[in-house]
Each structure stands twice: as structure tokens, then as C-alpha cells.
Length: 103
Image (tube, rainbow, N blue to C red):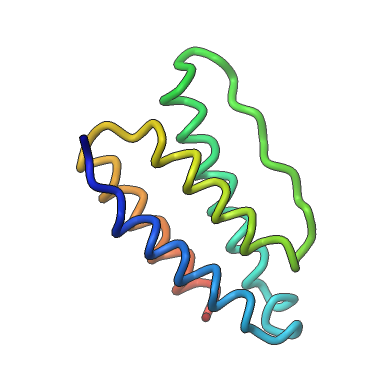
């Protein structure tokens, strides 16, 4: 079993920062970065869970839902991750998205 604790903690931290961010920061791109991350995490989870099936795109639920969307997406992903490399790849995505979001 792969330890995904560090991944969920990283996403929880990012989500907390998004929730605490002012609306202006969310509008300037933080929410868009979070949605992009949520969509990529969800895509990866779907590909691992059902290889060969076209992944569905996570809908845009609005800037105030972005933190919840990344949280849901990472929890779906950790259910199907099977290697440390997958954890490291996802961690890199989270770090980059948080950096681009500026939170």
C-alpha cells in the first residue's frame, strides 16, 4: 500500500489557502489554477480506475468551490494510486498549481 498522506496534506493546505484568499485573488487566477489542478487530478484518477475509457471533465462549479473541487479530486485519486511515482507526480502538480495561484 502506498502512503498518500503527504499528497492529501498538500492539497488540504492548498485548499485552506484558497478558502482564506480574498475574492480578488481568486478572480485574478487562483481559482482557475485550482480548477485546472482539480481537473487534472480527476483525469488521472479516472484513467487509473478505468483505463481506455475517456475521462469526464470536472465542471467549473465557480471560484468559491475551487478548494472543494481539488479536495474531492485528490481523494478520488488517492483511492486508486498504486505507486510512489504517481504520488510524487501528483505532488509536483499540486506544488506548481499552488505556486501559479499565488496562495
